Amino acid sequence: MGYEKLTREQDYLQSRVDEYIWQRAKQLGVSRRRFLQTLAAGGMAAALSGRFSRTAWAAQTAPTPVIKPTPKELFYDFGSNKEMRWENMYERGYLVPNELFFVRNHTRTPRVDAKKWRLKFEGSGIQKPMELTYDELLSLPSVSMIRYVECAGNGRSFFEAVYGKKADGTQWKLGAIGVAEWTGVPLAEVLNRAGLKKSARDVMPEGLDDLKVRRPMPVAKALEGDTLLVYAMNGQPLPPDHGFPVRALIPGWIGVANIKWVGRIEVSEKPLFSAWNTDTYVLIGPDYKPEPPSKGPVLSNQDLKSALELPWGGEVNVARRLVRGRSWSPFGKIAKVEYSLDQGKSWQTARLREPNIAAAWVRWDFDWEPKPGKHTIRVRATDEKGNTQPNKVPFNQQGYLYNAVVDHPI
Image 1 (spheres, helix red, strand yellow):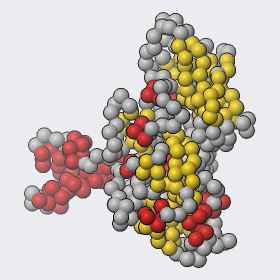
Image 2 (cartoon, helix red, strand yellow):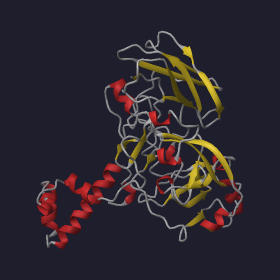
Image 3 (spheres, helix red, strand yellow):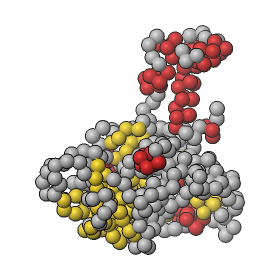
Image 4 (cartoon, one colour):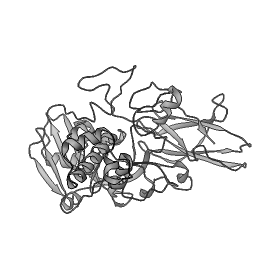
């Protein structure tokens, strides 16, 4: 099966396991017919190891999908994906440290040698196809921006709580989000050097990961001042799990658009398509119609959300405390944050704390003196454009853009 058909992590990882087992079978002299017969019966891994199941074999032989340490006290573990635990941000500042930043991988983190790395610009939409080395990119004019990156599926687990059916994909709560200071070269700078044509329509960065994840954007988005080719994160070279040597930063757009480990950028005079804007990262469900060649409306912007800096379902002392949290919107600054301690019967206004940066987030807090027992806290934000978090959002099969008010148990 080619990589193009392995856009789901489960399919990819299983295919790698099957490939490994087949290689071991050949070493032991097993014929392909016998291999397929035994594999269909579910016994090949056991036959080869004498004790491992197929799943256990994968765990023993597959490479580590994430490089940085991700201890359970800091992250929820979803294999190749790691969700930030919000309670660890309570004593921290505005930015998420690199070591706490969530990880979203479609397969595994690749090891890229910056000395051998090249960034290719190709396609009918430019006059001068070109190639940049890492040092050449670093020598170009650069800027730094504080922006968030958020997975399109952040909040996905709440679909099951509301609709009683689980959406496809990693069951994130609200920790698939992070704000950092990103440093890099405006994509417009490089496109202009490549002779961007007036007739150019789409720009599509492509990653160097196993699947070569790629997703197009219109030229207008590519030319915005904060659309960057990033090489530093919070003042440090990009960590491998976050895109070293270079990633795209597409502020306000869903996480997959912020391609990591970029190695190629196609600029086209015609619309561009990939599996990541036709089969996945589109809305599929009873409330959405297909938009050929895509299976449903294609996602671009993320949506308005809020999160509490409290353990999920955890405990706090029965004493007066300062409750903290953060809210964010791709459409502008946050204008107001409200909280409810009585299942939404009444709402009070939280205090906003500077800075309040558009396409990043704002911190807020309120005083609370809980009584013994179980509680739920609801939070909703409103941005400067008048967008407010809803009470409910329609179900979609792949669980994207869940931004409704949630009950945080404590």
